Image 1 (cartoon, rainbow, N blue to C red):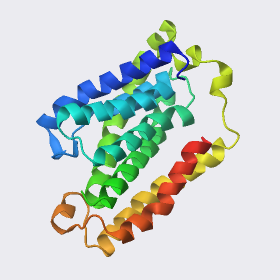
Image 2 (image 1 turned 45 degrees about the vertical axis):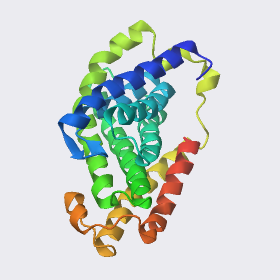
Image 3 (image 1 turned 90 degrees about the horizontal axis):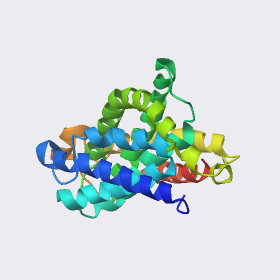
Image 4 (image 1 turned 180 degrees about the vertical axis):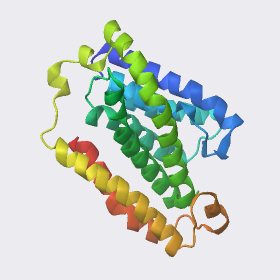
Length: 251
């Protein structure tokens, strides 16, 4: 996509829009100070992914990094935030190809929001726990639920209302990029299967290991009893993380 000037512009647009909405809420409504907050901006990566394709993936990654930098939450965890948000903006355009011109088609976004939110939460939660900052049971679940709720509420409405305009303006990624640069992998179905297995197994294994072995309860209770940085949880979730990485390459 980097050889298309308009795709680079759309990357900058996606990143700046994401960061601009993220930054105020880092101060106003933090959920885990220094790590995550209530994020109405979570609708942006999926919204832009449907319209702008790969530009949204890079925009989500860069926008989240800008948000961390300017919002005062930049740290080692931002590395995993970069990868998690890249996937959050990458998955929708790779697995969803419908023109949203009806409520019925807008409802097809539900599984897209679910798997994108799931993968984002698993990747960031696993990485931040692995370096000993925040227990997976706290951060992974909060990111997953935060992304899912916001995207389910806002994305179908926004995409349905904006789709005709974006299409009319000729800035859909399919209108900008050549067909040969948008070829679908012959292994895309296998990639989707791996993605679901990796995402679902990751959240289940992460929570089971946290609760049963490390005494880290779900969500906020994980702060008082949770232990982050335990090698058992890191290694136990590694197969799920590997499946997610392989899936991203196969899509």
